[in-house]
Length: 424
Image 1: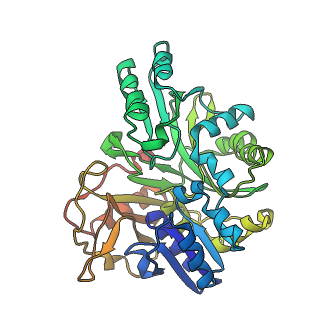
Image 2: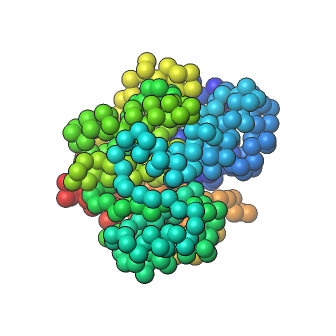
């Protein structure tokens, strides 16, 4: 098979690495890709939102399966564009990707179908949102309705903070059109857990659990980022939690989307909060998480291509999804200053240290080649260093050891990824 992957980050590198393990796959292309993906795929200079060019390329190269990694093209309808030309593509159609594309839609869906989540109100007028806050309980959560690169969520401890947050989202449009509508949500406390799943529209298969670290600095301080590291599985995702979620959340979400005429085929990411009153849905994503994919996919034993084809064909009930009985930790190496301002073009050294090491991987998130052919930094999140271990503490120790193999100017990372493991 010839595979095309759409995207350019660490998640797409993890997808490409997993696709390369499939006996079915002969050739991998990635658009636009990055310097790491280029080691295992042929990168193509087409951007993720250039649907017409991507469709034309898939036809020209007789691509057998296209895998959409990113949220923007999914929400924009790339799957519909490919299907209209008779091309096989993995990911939800536009009318199903709204599950991530609109927080107001997903909250309304959960309310209608009694899927456990936080209480909320939706606003399209900043003045009405400000008035609502006058009688609200704090802390409180403000969410831009649309896509905001994982950063459109503000946790506000006081009325003054919340009012500033409304202006930031709705008036100043810090997150662009994503802030045309806003969800104000009750603040929930507990452990956060991410659970990825494959869906074919009626059947759902759950992947191994994970936990992300969103804040830029140690001890969950600093600004929200796209993710500074993650570990899998989560020791807080117990069999009791799994039973509850399977009964009230996972299948219920797939069934709700089907009932709304929005059959979901692809990956649903469930962001969960384990509250004292039981698990609640924090958010949905319509694709693999990043950097969750970097710890979940390397532990997957079932052929990923088989699973994706079953999602497209509606035969996921015939798939037995199996994961290794071990653990993985990913530490993100970022450019100092991320997520605000950072320099690019810094030469990266030490990447060869990962060659031939089965339990280690370095997934490129923001890299490129310079004019001399050297791999250089090209983003805020630069690399995701992933290591496996028999246990989570062992995987964590291995991952931090491996971060020392790689160097670049202004290299920055959190030093407490997976620290919660010690409290389990």
